[in-house]
Image (cartoon, rainbow, N blue to C red):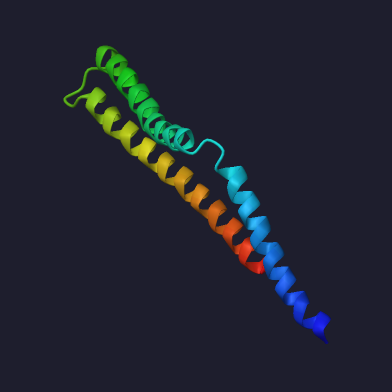
Length: 107
């Protein structure tokens, strides 16, 4: 009977220990990981914006219109970059939530 009482306790202790080990492995670079993520968000917005500007300048030179292709594609690039960033961050949050749920199930 005493063995049955220890079994759930030992499983909870083991699950907590595994969670701590995984957290230590994820935390390897701390500040650098945060700076890298911040940079990734910035570049995922900047690249589509710069491509939109370059394409807009070329279109303005080749096919002049009453409106500015450069401004139009600049806004389009910013929107595309924001959508891309939102998708990437959402995917990361889901992965973190899945890891936390699996940790909770181990307890």
